[in-house]
Image 1: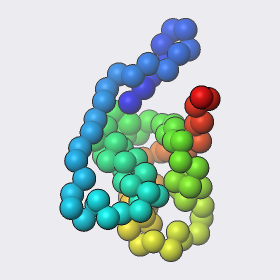
Image 2: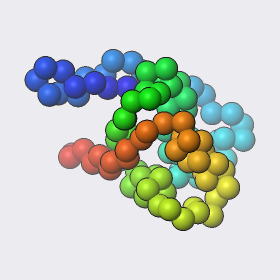
Image 3: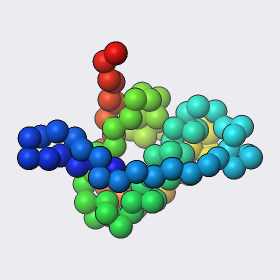
Image 4: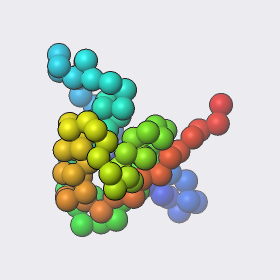
Length: 99
């Protein structure tokens, strides 16, 4: 979780992580990316609930899945996206770091 400081730089204010379960280790990369976003939103729900929040991701597939009005043809991802959209006011942006 990051926040802009007085000089308009993004500064981390909190970190979160967890281990994958045995079943989650078999997920595709796109599923893992959306799972990470779902986990982070759930973990920081008390901070981002009711507030417009920008999610920066370097995975353009995850961003396009969230922004799409159509099904992703993956029930698990569709379920996570539906829960995110119902709970939070999120805006997704692709963030590509140079180098």
